Amino acid sequence: MRSSPDCDVLVIGAGIFGATLALALKEHSSRIQLLDREPDLLRRASYTNQARVHRGYHYPRSVLTALRSRVNFPRFVADYSDCIDRSFEKYYAIGRFLSKTTAPQFSTFCRRIGAELKPAPRRVKGLFDSRLIEDVFVAREYAFDAVKLRQRLRAALLAAGIELRLGCMAIRVKPHGDCLSVMCCTATAEFSITARRVFNCTYSGMNHILSTSGLPVIPLKHEVTELVLLDVPDELKSVGITIMDGPFCSIMPFPPRGLHILTHVRYTPHYSWQDLPGQPYDEGDAILKRYSRQSRYPHMIRDAQRFVPGLKACRYVESMWEVKTVLPRSEVDDCRPIFVRQHQGLKNFTGILGGKVDNIYDIIEELKASDLMRV
Image (cartoon, rainbow, N blue to C red; front, side, top):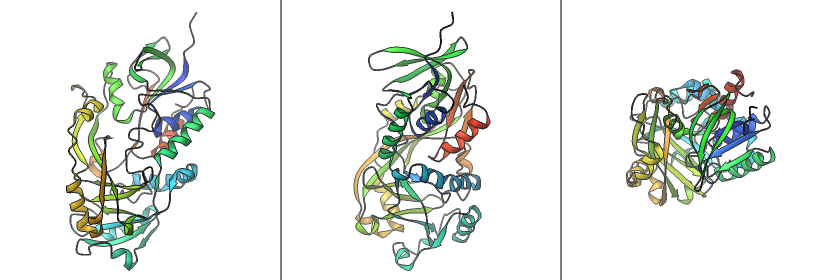
């Protein structure tokens, strides 16, 4: 007699995408398991990022990405209102030199996608060096608190009866009759989980399980990135700033720590590599662990304070390190397309990748359109 699988759906990766997908799948299946190598939800890239809830402003070179962000923004803010930080004003400043977008172009772009934008008042413009900044705008953009979001999602998952397997790493996947078998390990044991359908939502680790399973890897670009936590001067505590569009920087409130987070297009990425089919695979976590982690904060802050002199009074707290992953085509126009691949080398094994928190809505719509939500 054929035995029933351990679950109908196994979701690998308990970041924002995996956790939210598991909740959405609950509408179609009663037996769902969510697995992650970390001891809790949202411990990796879902936490170590700028925490920006995008509204489209960031993507003047990719209208489709910008438009999707503008459309998804109010939905994410409404769904997770208790996890959103609205306590700051957000300014976008356009560089006079090296920017790929001029101030008039940026203004036209925002009107085109329907994103609210206003000229900054004189007191705000006074924060910037007008010799290097063409113009400054007030935008409506928020930050999310990953710790509050973790607590919110954990409660929702438990209330939905979704089984959490945390501190558990997926090693490889293989066919098991008309189901899939995923070999897993904890600190003390190895075991397998059988499921009718498996979703791979492991972001930078997406190719790890493909490689160990002898399946073709997905062409992806990875970067070891440094995100700097700062204590900013009082005049900037309720402010978020993005200087664009080119080799510039951004400083945003980071709600989980009550600090600001600084990134720089030139200095945040420390080391990059690509996963390519037919080439030896090097696992991202292993690269991150052996990377020297010599901070580039002095370079970041020296450049940032040229544009915002008040940043000279910042106090460095620490650097956070993570692997950032994008599809190679994002390098062309800074787009952030979603990736959904059904039957990723095996029947009912689906790979999922998103680059922004609001991408989860596009992914769920894509899964529904492809009838991948039903088991």
